[in-house]
Image 1 (cartoon, rainbow, N blue to C red):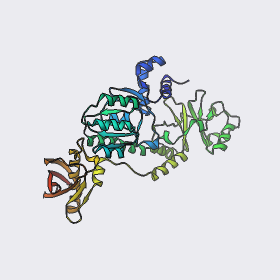
Image 2 (tube, one colour):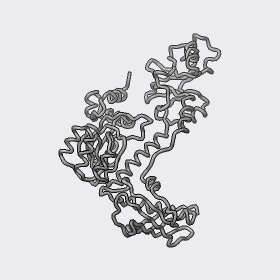
Image 3 (cartoon, one colour):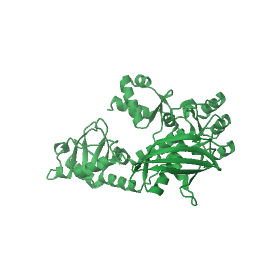
Image 4 (tube, one colour):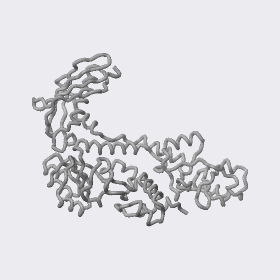
Length: 435
């Protein structure tokens, strides 16, 4: 019989995607205490089947597959950017396929906006309305609100319209970082991702005999099987070593090894692989918190997963990566770098974000020091003492000049030009490493 905790999780799984969940509601419907309901909801959140949003509540969401980890739900985006949902709450469970920076004319926005995408834009009502009509959710930066008719449209389309106090660059960086973090998690393979599920696993019950071990061995080619009681709780293991010299009619509970090594679905691949090598075993039962059998993981499962990881490409691009890829050294000018201002680098006004400006000068200084002094630097202080707005699609020229360099420290002056005009100046103090 399932525990109350398991019953609550099964109930949550049976709810429709997008359903709202509360501790009081669960406690009342399943006749459990508020504490039991709260713990089960937290476990459901850890499993990725619900998401809790401030000022909205907890909602049932679709659990992402392992190969779909680079995508986020709109509910997760709200939490990431500390946003406020203005409308379209019924669509928070939907998956974000891509996000688009709306720092351009409406005609250009139309070319990039697609269904299930997220348009990041400022207080432009016509763009909000167009995005919703095109099937895209809207994230309004700068803390701005929108028109009531737009909120009503969001409710009708079941597409979230969200407001955040952050600027466009910061929001894009936060979402990028969240995707990058999930890609890192994607590389951490857990037992639950590779295990043979209960329905396909071979096991023995305490009432079965040695002859049943031979039947399982012939079908599965395994030599080690978990033994379960009438509640499907793992109580032992039977291996080829245990059955040597035993009669075919001997009950397995008399010869099994008790207190077996088990793992849970959240055990990492690295951990179970080390365990198998250290203990010299070929198969480990996968159990839940109540020791109920959920499946098995074999040495073959582990080897396949490790081979797959080696073939998996390493992907994920942060805003810093974008800055680095959009900057290059000008061939004809020593120590001069150029950078193209693309939409991801702009704020809600469509001009170069201060955060990106800082990233650009830092990247230029690091490149210059590597070329001129063959040294890596760790920036300790950046002082920006002049800055002008730089529009989107501008080509910037960045000139770092080494003012002073010692054994440990360097002082660098940076000049940023656009169309022969100085648009920024900065002074950097950096520590030299690996010189």
